[in-house]
Image (cartoon, rainbow, N blue to C red; front, side, top):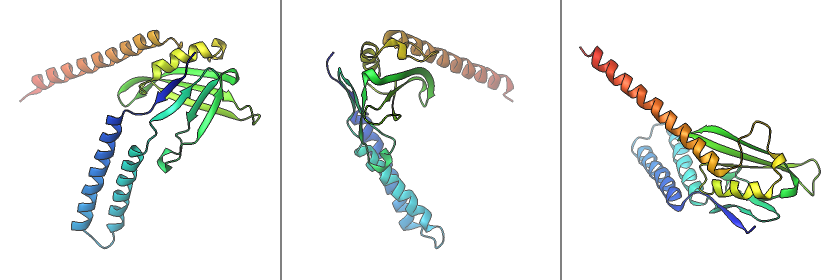
Length: 198
């Protein structure tokens, strides 16, 4: 097995988000400067600071979130990302105790989430947890690597299989069913509107 990088958001996505939040911060700055009031002006400052802070968050997001090697997974913990802190952690493949693979509902519809838990070799009792969703551009490559690196017995009962092709088909089917249901609802709404028009 070779080394595989798990990349973060694409550069275009990061630039887009940073520009949107910076533009919102500029807009709130303009509102604050042109419409200052005595008591409520602090709220405008909070909005301005928040927008520029989130814009900076998108600019400084790491380009690489993890590195898969034959020994294990080195990954960045994103829990304190809003504070611009991304410490590195390591999971040994031999110490993986559980893998959960299940479907979630994301902003864009159905998605997949994989959680890998492993004990720490240096600190007994400590468990490291790594999460990755199908929104990540390297998700299916990660699964393909994981299924060959880890004992299949670590897959939790009731979890979806680690087969990338099977999961793609299942997720695609779920998305089509959701779109079909949405299409039927829109058609029903249009028919109802037509029937109820005055």
